Image (tube, rainbow, N blue to C red):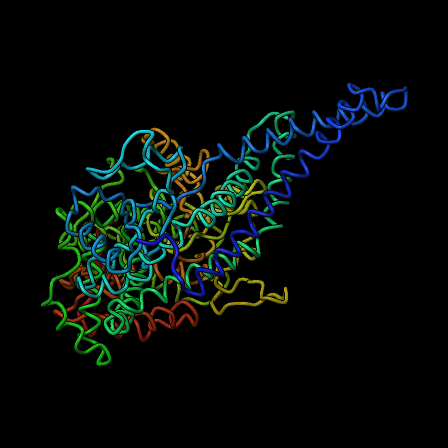
Length: 634
């Protein structure tokens, strides 16, 4: 197997790698230049050529800075060499747990005539790449193959990178399709094995890690000053080699793509269609299905299997996807794993931590849920939690319970109370709201008050800090129903809504913001307690924060619409025999008479925006839903 091929991209990558190494050499030359001048002056004094007071002063003037520069250069070099490069959060796949997968990858590497990856890991994303983890901080290098040279006689060669595979690919793609998709990725190990390219990458990763170390917060002023100097030097070197490093990686990618054309090229064109389909299904599954469960303190333990169900449902609904289900008769790539269920569960937990936040291990309020229990444990409970929050907001506004004739519990939570309040026009009632209670913007799609972690925001030190509710008590600053959202030009833009819907949405926003602030404090403590040495921490102290939040914040109008919809669904379940269900493409859904209720949202918006309950009341009557009967809340 060759370290670097004859492809034009490989040669371009090597030339760019040499340019990166020249930047390193110039930096070293600048560091030793004062020392060289000091050596010349000292040598001249010892030989009797450079003598006199002037030369003595020159020796002191050059020698002292030379020593300081050497010490500074040694310190920077030590930080660059010892700093741990960042790695992507992944699920490691040992060879004993997937021998067939390792065998397939090694056969692919043999066909491409490149070194095989040193290990395989999975990521909960629709992407695949090579990641260098040869740094000593990432663990010992892999053991040599049986029968190979050992000890000092073994030549020192760069450790091949780790192959990171998107977990949805394993469950949706067939074995041949996965091999075709991985061919260009595995081909990248060839250029990576070249000493010049490997050395250039180590240098760039070391500089990047040194910048991260220098930017870490929590240091005392003297140490902070030294770290700032190290960070300045590392950034200066990064700017000097940035363009060369970028072109080097492009050359490596071009060389890998050129080499992979000889392996399964025709199948790869077909497999790329499955990549796009898997990405669409994965994104839909996370945002519509997994996110509501994460907010309830439950994480679906079979997300990758859910991708297959979601894409199968898509192929049933969409005529453009016809023929995709015929692939399901072929061998799926997940059969290459010895225990696909355990791997799926680990990838699902990592996805929950990446996109929502939470402890690294299951606990009492962060438990897995299977798809069979999803409608009862997630859908129904989400509706009832939202309905309870809606009635608490009505209580805070001083709204009286509905007094309909024949109501078994006049003071109970009813849908009629919500309809009557949002129907009546006029000024909003002045409830017992306190001035010190913040009315902030609610986080995105937050149904469960005891689970949601606010999305992280970039802090001044480059890490992540909790994004709590705004400290203002003016809901118009955060937007709301009829409130004032700021557009791109800084002008206030009003949303439709009545006065009562404005007040109710503001109260819900404040209630949810306070609940999430309490939740974040409890979650941070629980996540720290459950943190293990092997678990992934995104930033110092931020163990429970998601680095990649899925969706932006909802407006107050959307928040109110979701709560009213949840109240309608609770009434349908308790009074009309409706059933909570899971739709693979749209998430939580309501089944009325075995059919999905898909026309509810426009009627709820008409009630909120116009104060007109007519369409919603007609819909309730058509399905036999009684709004005057109390519902069960959580």
